[in-house]
Length: 587
Ligand code: GTP
Ligand code: SPV
Ligand code: MN
Image 1 (tube, rainbow, N blue to C red):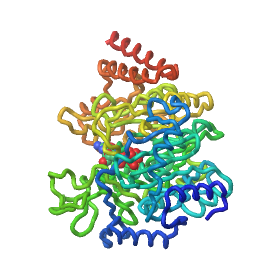
Image 2 (image 1 turned 180 degrees about the vertical axis):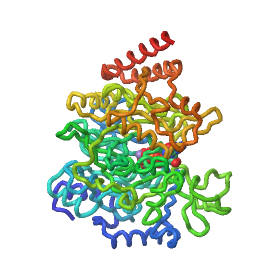
Image 3 (image 1 turned 120 degrees about the vertical axis):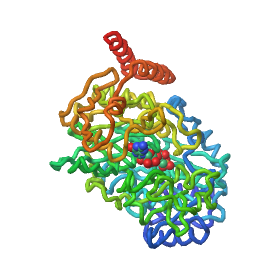
Image 4 (image 1 turned 30 degrees about the vertical axis):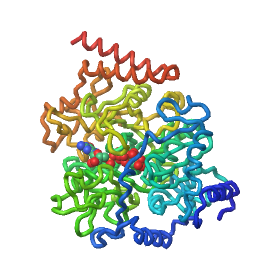
């Protein structure tokens, strides 16, 4: 199967443990994929969608208890618990293996074991990294084929002597009581049992490209982040690249594919990635970003021709839909899609839709589709060196407190503001939805090591370069007293991106507040937008009383990291508190 002795030995050991009926080395070919799809149609894993309207598209209905990431069952297993930090569930490696190995014992009996060599990152990039996922799920194989670069070229990369991450996955019995997502960063190993859902099962994505990669990035001096990457082309044809970190289901895919409003004629957005960025310092001192992924595993609900036309024009063919609803003529459907709601629908669990059973599509229903189909896909997306990043944008889903946008005063303040991000929880993970929690750099579920060390790593970049990106914080999700979004969002977010681009070019104005630099209403291009000036002012206002409470909450959060917390973070808290007091005295 392979001439790499380490890989061969691991495949043999896994086969001996899991006892599959057959073993297949996945080559990623069309013929192989067609055969897999045929077998999944035959056994009901997939359902064919309407070939006229949605050519080569399929529906998968998951087990109803297996619809999202399971953060409480996700572990980072390191020798020293302090290395995993209070931000992770921890187990000693020995204990972690002892917990899952018995579950894998004989788990592939009667099943096929698929060996998927994959590459995260463009072919020929010095920053790309390999992995091998062993799985008993053909659905995982079909999804990995879209999300990563799989098959011979990935295997070549490994056989040339490059290191690789070993990821063992079995759907087991899909029993929530026997479900674990275990990471062993010291051994570049992942063991995932009992779930077929994206982030739990497509091991190249969150498990490898974020949790394991963030650990490697810290040791090697780079960054592995939960960020989209996009290029903003101005009317003169200059392109500014930015990367943006928002928590799960908080707008990365939508921002990455943004179509500007008509009034901002001549501006264009180019998509490089929608979920993960790997960034390295270039010789010029700039951060250069690649997207390690090859596809989008995006949130379906809310996606429409009016909110995200580029996405709608990406996902109508060669796509796998998971847990969406279907119309009687076999078209995928979800809440927020264009058009009137059909009178009859089959819901995500395969039942005739009835409102008593909740929404027709699961709130975390998703599509899997190749990035190459996206009309806004950047011609720089496969550049081995990546794209140079001028701005980093952080944000969350906050119905209150956080303004539409602010700019950090400098790198140190930017790292603080990013580390202090809070956001309302979403359906992307199991558990309560809508609860505000700290989600530093949108990495709460994904940082493979102690957050305190992570912030130290981030802060350390200021000693390595004088050419770092500017840092911004945004919030598209402020709500008014009636619970309605105050900012139109989606394409209109271009207005904020334009201000950010101008700030990067040393143009456009801002006002200094203790929190950061805020645009005046007149600094934002609001042409063609029907929004009351009062609403704009409210979106940009910093209320010192609210922010005093917020800073106290931030201070308490950082306190939970004890002695390891970098002094620069504490210094920022003191500065902001002092400046809030001064501004209140002045008022
Ligand atoms: P993950 O794939 O989970 O990492 O999520 P993501 O950050 O890519 O989120 P995505 O862009 O898929 O958006 C999640 C939800 O937020 C969808 O229902 C969107 O329609 C909605 N959304 C995205 N952008 C905006 C916005 O600017 N305003 C409002 N109100 N909703 C938005
Ligand atoms: C997220 O939850 O941030 C996702 C989807 O991007 S998953 O791959 O399932 O983690
Ligand atoms: Mn994500």
